[in-house]
Amino acid sequence: MHETKLFYTPLWEDDLSVAMRDWVDHRERMLSKIYELERASKGVAKTNFGGWQSDDEIYVHPEFGWLMEHILRLSNQVAAEYAPEFKFNNGHIWANINRRNNFNAVHTHPNSLLSGVAYLNVSSEDQGQIQFFDAREGTPTNHWPCFFQLPGRTPLTDDTFSVKPTQGKILFFPSWLKHWVTPNLTDEDRISVSFNLRAT
Ligand SMILES: [Fe+2]
Image (cartoon, rainbow, N blue to C red; front, side):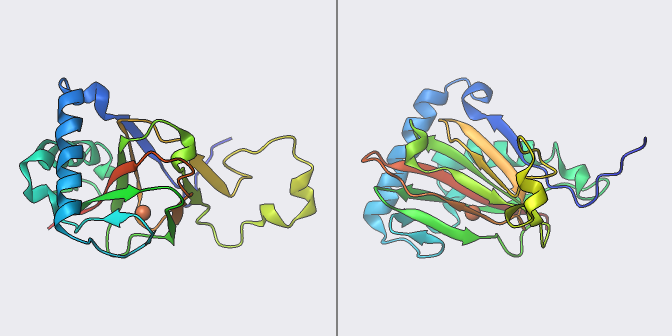
């Protein structure tokens, strides 16, 4: 039978540590800059409960130039899914530090097309996982008994999806996709860079 996927929800993933030859040094420079920015500014309060979040223009610092360019390169691998001949060429990028018990509340990224996150410092899933929620309104898996009979869950029958963070992992997802970040249960800083992309 022919299948049409209606209103599908993609999640794209790549690995910065593979894409970048001097990833270890580059990561160190980005982390140092993030701590320097934190010392210089109390940051912004948005979805973060505790922790520190930078302003959304850290691409102005040379330490993040390669990352911003690479994010745009990767985004344009999927731009055609938004529109033929479409190219992302612009966006915002910000840094997040989540310390013990800090988390990010459920949110979307309004007025953006494609969003994502890259993990710069994380060594354990206990530092907080990003969890996405099914965008299909009324997905019944939580309360229709017939769903309880299923031996496992698939993308057709599940209504949440969690990603274990690993150093260098970068995720892209549609900006309308609801998500949150579970609390950091460790004493190690969870440091990530998030971004919103669109075109001028
Ligand atoms: Fe987010």
